[in-house]
Length: 339
Image 1 (cartoon, rainbow, N blue to C red):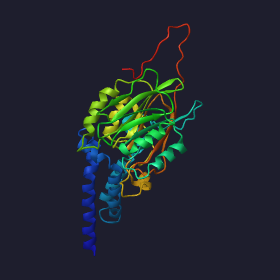
Image 2 (cartoon, helix red, strand yellow; image 1 turned 60 degrees about the vertical axis):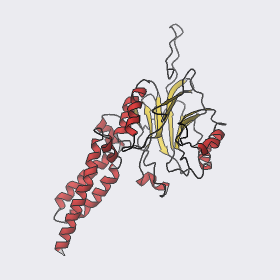
Image 3 (spheres, rainbow, N blue to C red; image 1 turned 180 degrees about the horizontal axis):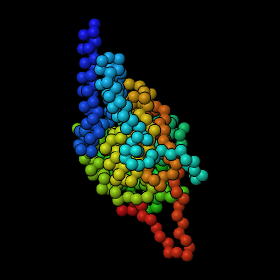
Image 4 (tube, rainbow, N blue to C red; image 1 turned 90 degrees about the vertical axis):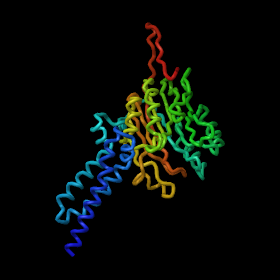
């Protein structure tokens, strides 16, 4: 019996060490997109490694088990907002600070091109009543439903490739800023325009990333980085990033756009053959909302299932008061999305 226990302990130790390999490689995501792909599963790998280590604490390999468990806990902690901010030397985008200004809202949703119950999306929108909607995967079957939404959200544009089911777009109750352009960037994967929030212009983008390595996600980000660096001022980028908030892929977009990913959203995606209700607990947090420092008191939460394999996200926020030029000074005008 003792020999069998020793063999089992050794098997657990070897398995835990093998699990640690992709876990460690995931921390090197900036070196190559392949390594960044491992990083998306960091919490799942860390939990698995921790579970493998627990039985070792009651064997002669308790020291090894304790070391493995400690590493698993440290690895998992880097997926939490506070730890990520500490490692990146930044502050969290999630804020609980009350504001006296007007509150606005944005709903981000991957519609799912073959959604069997599109009416549930419209019901969710009617309930949430957001000022802006950013969406992805609007295939041809979604054209009629988008037209219905345009009755309430008359300011609309989208980006798509001919024949693609992966259209991305923006619907808004509020007008686009005067003179602003509607831009399709990153191989038509990112739709961006400037929206007027009671006199304050905010650059708003809807983004749908390509799948990570071995697919072309990194190449699209390579094309997006120089484009995003051209913009300044208040900015919100929402979408299906197909990347976790601690990944190098998201960090590159944050850096290029001078934004930070909202924390505390939780898992948003689940395999289609599994209940989407499990997403907040065991799903991947691949839908992101990035905000610049000018966006005041942002708060983001997931919403109810709408028959997509992604959960919607609701962002509530405030914006700075519009700058009114002094009558004694020459009038100046900031340029946003005018090129």
